[in-house]
Figure (cartoon, rainbow, N blue to C red):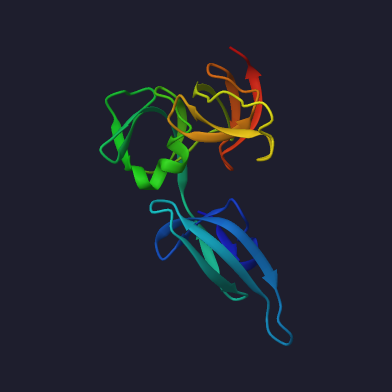
Amino acid sequence: MAVLSYNEILPKCIINHSNEPYEVLSSHVFRMQQRKPVNQTKLRHLVSGKVIEISFHQNETVTEADISNMPARYLYTNKGESWFAEEDNAKNRFAFPDNVVHDRVQWLTPNSIVEVLTYEDKPMTIKIPIKVELVVKDAPPAVKGNTVSGGTKLVELITGAKVNVPLFINTGDIIRINTDTGDYTERVNKA
């Protein structure tokens, strides 16, 4: 485990803070007048997803969390839990509370491969691809002259997620979604 000084705590790092793993979302090193520099950070807890703001001072250090990656297969979501299985060992199954991983699971179809981050050999959270291709399950017809709202309509994807898309998207089309923002990026092919 590497020891990081206050100015090495940068976005995308995963650190130990209070003996818990946190992902650094943002950091800003600044100096206020005659004072010593401070790194103001936003950290997200890997398990609960709770975001906190912490300031690290010049004399403080943290250790980098010992995180490893494990490929896993998304199985299903039921009764508030999302279930996964290790890719090479289907007997090794584990679940996350749906409220912790819902923002990522909504873009997954059963048997999708994801990356599971493990901390001390325990699954903590999942990482999914930034862009996924999904089939449009239900799209209302475009109404001619309905461009006041910017020319978009709300469609339902095969996973159950709802996304605003351009009016030319129809049921059965395959579209590409940015999973970070939840926005439509492009149509891959039409039905």
